[in-house]
Length: 320
Length: 320
Image 1 (cartoon, rainbow over the protein chains, first blue to last red):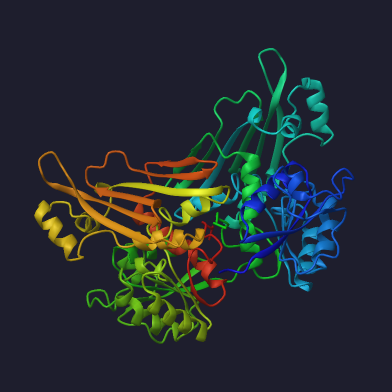
Image 2: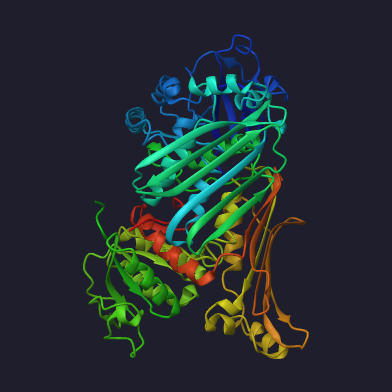
């Protein structure tokens, strides 16, 4: 029998609690040995009860410390690297590997090279591996299209479209996409950097690094999806990678409460040109929970340092 | 600038010549420094001219020897591991890495564990890495469905369908699939092991190893595709992976000259269940040439030993 991997769940928001439920399902292969959250309402409670399953005799603590022999921490707190860097650094000093859902960590080398270098150095110093994962960024709009170029010669362009029905998603996502705002409120929040999917530039940078396109420009624009009645239903965000005069990467993301045709679709242009379609699309929350859990064995077997999906064997599901 | 990788092309049949053309397109990133084939009609000729491009001042030799500082050999000779093992062993003694299109090498650990162990040991002894690649086995019916399980929890089954229009493929494939035979000839050749796609059991074994399904049985059955007139148009091959009473893996491959709806399609059953479709399907020859070339940088950066797609970062296209 394979030795169980000892996992700590760090961050118990909606994503963290979803991950916790999946972690508990993967026993005995994965064993939850600790849980961390800063919320005083959660500290001291049993993490199984908090996640809506049965008691597991793992009590939520308010900080990451005193955990013994941890193989991997699943870290699900914030989206911005500047916010999570101190948390990651503290975990790394214990030598634990980290799978984080921090969007900016999915491919930090282009937009955040200095924190990336610091995290990489700390990981190597403590013989640990750290990576950022998720459905988007991390899979649907970067890794998967990259994998789809394996059978292609003379690659000329990659176009990805993701349409998400925000109605079937958790409430924070509906707020996150701006549903219910006026267009003026929407534009103001976009201008303040408080609205928009985090990670599209990271996806473009990851694709470009993999292919070897030395982009001249990465664009990223967020517009409201407006209903006939003039209400904001969500967002439409387009990111592009420009090489010389050519748009070689185009990522188009729509997340709104009026998307009736959710889909993940990509077009790979080269020899041959073809497209790939996932009707209905990949569910963002469940998919991110699953990818985080499915990456644990991969990260526990990898060489030390900060890794991206370009460096690691592909994550896949596994039975307990 | 990235240092060029020095590549030898070993085997100059239809696949090897296709790979050669793609290799030449990837200069200066990849540099062809040698070519090998046993055919006296090819030995002594310029490999560029043989591949139908311009002269490249690389002369075809009849054996692999005396090549200096080779980073990678692309090996495209035979489908069966027993046939290629001596060739691989000879290459490995020079310390060169190997990307091979040998079908049985794509996942040899289940059906050919002893040669796999010998090749792994030789590779490690000479600090080299070796892997088997291709569109099928190696991508469309194993790696790609595995990658598609990354966002899935409670995985219950994987079903893959590949329908190939053999009319648009090279003549050897049309023969390989039995087109033009009588059904009696077809059945006799299947019984003699002389007809049928090589690699379906390998694909099933690779998926099962990745997921951790300890299969009770792998099945593999080849039937003729028969036209209304009673002629054999090609083959329909089905492989399954059985766990207890459940069929958890089903791979269905049709290659025939009357396939009007070529497609690659997979269904992933779990939380969530979804399907993925590539209308038109991935062209087998071009795709295999491209995957071989696209794997060269991956294999040159990997740890020594015999690796499968489960162990390596995913191959993807790259610009010269």
